[in-house]
Image 1 (cartoon, helix red, strand yellow):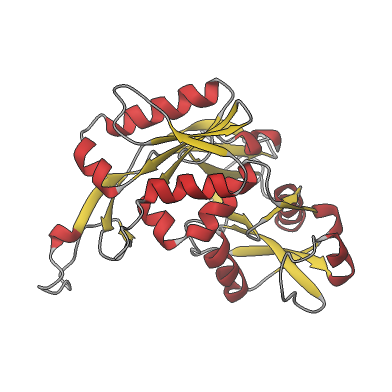
Image 2 (cartoon, one colour; image 1 turned 30 degrees about the vertical axis):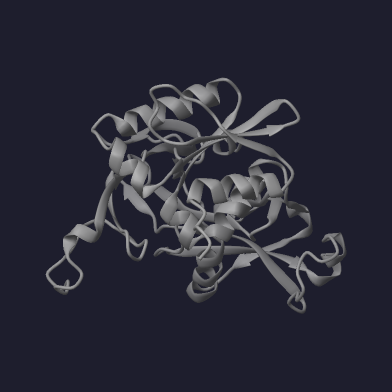
Length: 304
């Protein structure tokens, strides 16, 4: 039987297969594998590949802080840096590959100006997000999709997809929360959250988020929109470019990974667990938290 290739090696091999030089970097004192992704001699990205085994060996209270420090130092030097977990690679490999490839400039570009935006239902949004967003779908109040009309399929490269839907193709989705209403002297202040945004795997829909945000703003007239940038993948640069301002950080949060299934949960086990599925199958890990961003559309003047 052939020896199974480790997750970091799989990731490294895939990066090489799409045309980059990928090597493991020596990082003295850092416990997790780091892959350097080079184009010619230029370092384009660092990928920290977190395996269950490396996390177990290195696990201590300072590890999340060390991870954040590593990411910040790399990003401050002008190099992209991301964290990829073993369970995400196993369960959502296509989405991980799509995001990494897009960050490295390998994706099919679709101008959002060619698309049409409209409201979509829960089932349509959920199906798209389950196949396009690393964290899948979650509850939302308002959902919008961007649709590429069939007449523009000609911009897609030959072989991009074997079967294209007739009429139009949904290429991006954004979902929003209901309004949180705060008291104010003249009228209520309405704050919404941008919950999810994703584009079709393998694509970069240029201007998609801006177009979806503007559609939501025109229809719902929010006073501000808040969202969160996942520190494992981003420092929120794209949000800042759209007029969002940093308003703080969410602290790292413990989650529990079922090492048998790869499923993540906020609690290690519950009363319904069977004896043959004991708590020891769960590995306690810690995400890196997120940055809170807010796009202000009206200055709040709250009652005292």
